[in-house]
Length: 72
Image 1 (cartoon, rainbow, N blue to C red):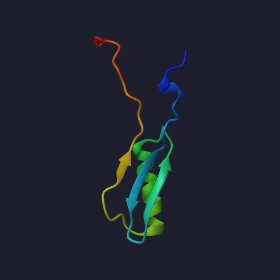
Image 2: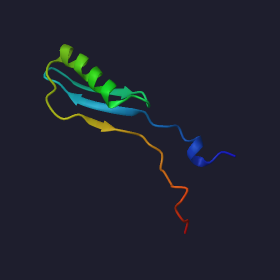
Image 3: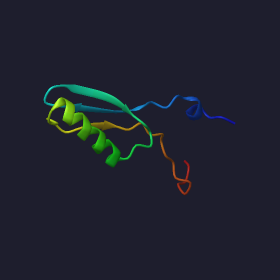
Image 4: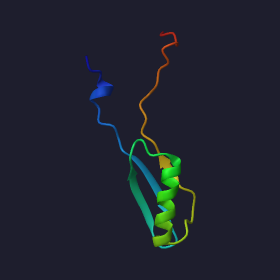
């Protein structure tokens, strides 16, 4: 049996970063670690100049309900 949540397409994770010479928004694989993300941003900084502002990370995550939680 499939629920509505299982039928929905999972939204991609995205990262937006502003470098000295460019603003970039990119998709990130669902299992990417923060260490891998930092490495990728470092490589992009070599091309586009210094990272100018904090990185905004949006993670698409399904709602979680604990199995121990009582339902109302």
